[in-house]
Image 1 (tube, rainbow, N blue to C red):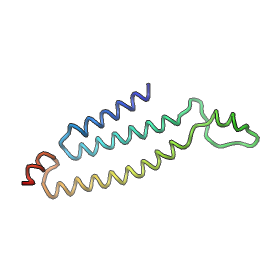
Image 2 (cartoon, one colour; image 1 turned 45 degrees about the vertical axis):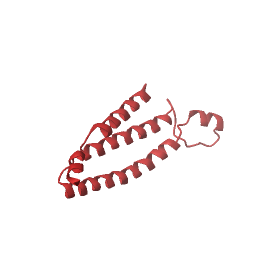
Image 3 (cartoon, one colour; image 1 turned 60 degrees about the vertical axis):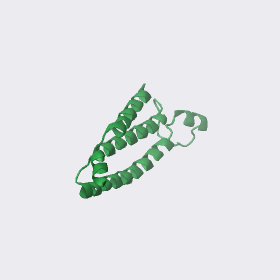
Image 4 (cartoon, helix red, strand yellow; image 1 turned 60 degrees about the horizontal axis):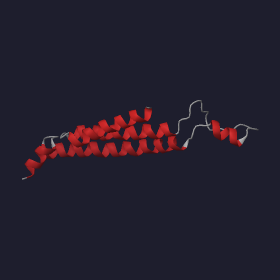
Length: 115
């Protein structure tokens, strides 16, 4: 069920990217899509009643592996968040430069002003 909600969140972002003409709204939609993917990856590593992946002395490997939460998706999401922040800064700077050049955030207006 929760995976379906991440798909809905991704679909909302995709709808914004495809239908909106404002560059700022497109950037926000891309960020929503990125957060949906990050949430999905975190949910893949979730295990109900799971424990932190820190092994104690004398603990069996099989029971430890069966009870722990997978840390790999969490590490991937942390990396994706940092990369996404850099991409977001680049997209916002592009929006600012486009606004300085054309005086609008509307894509169709930018195409018309191109001449």
